[in-house]
Image 1 (tube, rainbow, N blue to C red):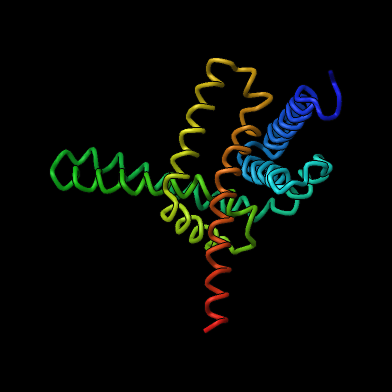
Image 2 (tube, rainbow, N blue to C red):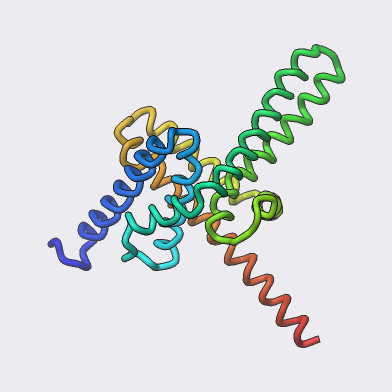
Length: 213
């Protein structure tokens, strides 16, 4: 019943993997003083999940997680600060424009709402882009922006998954400890990886056509 090929065995293995990674994510976020630990630990979690999606399911989880956490600590915090500042600027603008209480303020408010939607779509892709490509900070923002606008339905899938996980942790708080980050990162990275494969196929086909010409 509990053989290597059984569904119960596979479920147990994935249960333990996801729980282990989620606990690492929480612990290293806390040990990084919360703010400074959140971005590198989240990137490390996504990097581990990316290995799994690519078929590397037997990687040493702790070593892989710690390697990505340590290597990307400074760069991910820089990217995180940029995204946080952009988010705060949008939030402050929303508060300011709504306080104007006139037609110009209303128009600017709705324009900022549209900008906020674009921001959240970009945020949904920024970490998968980070762990999949080797770019500079500005390059990650640019590429996440292009991909998110080119594949908005995938961004909607990611947003819906995030909302479902948020409410699931409210009703079942134990999920936060074991699956809130790891399971959500698995879903997000799965959606994003499909997009990356499509982009890479398009780029390779263009290169073939260019070579033939």
